[in-house]
Amino acid sequence: MLKEERLNYILDEIRAYNKVKSSDLSIQLNVSEDTIRRDLKELSDTGKIRKVHGGAMASSYIPFSYKDREVYAHEEKISIVKKAIPLIKDDQVVLIDGGTTNLELVRLLPQDLKATFFTNCLPVATQLAEHPNIEIVFIGGKIIKNALVSIGLDVINSLNEIQADICFLGTRSIHYKNGITEIDREEAQVKRAIAQSANHVVSLAISDKLDTLQPFKVEGINKINTIVTELDPNHERLDNYKKSGVEVL
Image 1 (cartoon, rainbow, N blue to C red):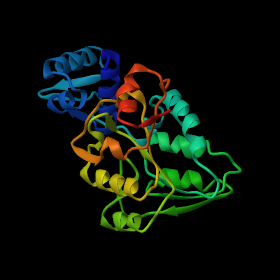
Image 2: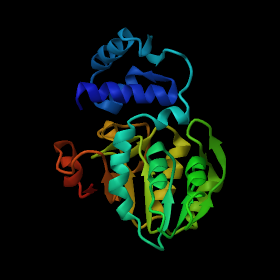
Image 3: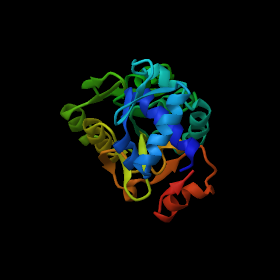
């Protein structure tokens, strides 16, 4: 991963969680802690973050909201969505979880599409409600406030009763060896249940998320059918994913 990509990844983590640990970033980005410390110093020197012992925090000390994250890498998300939409066919049962890329996906669905969508994400469900031909089933439970998704045993039990044609996973981290991982244990459990309830699993990931790791496993790379990024499918950063047998769009 290039330096600029690392810096963007670090900023994205701080936008989402208000703070980061150098040791965690070292594992997630597969670089030394010395490299991470230099990256954090550079971001701190420009006023984008506040460097603290063992990591960094948002300079404002205020967690970035879901709305704030919607504007992050917006052009890249639109590029991803345009590639992903043709995967959805009429009369399919679709599972879709949270994330701002998934929100863009449902915003741009063709108006004549007829399908049934199950989701555990409040903004996604609200957006789908504006579509004239989509049937929506919201899977409720305890809400993670900064992600606006439902989690918990009731959500997982509901997902276990569904057999979907395809699912779309918003992706925090994906690695060609380790698959999809998440920073929150309960969110990882729900994402795993979504993937296991679908015949075809699609990961939507901006390139900043490639080759990164989080503490909790969602699914191995062998369980992912398709990865959609903003990159050209022939980009060298996607070679290892194709070698793992994953379709890359």
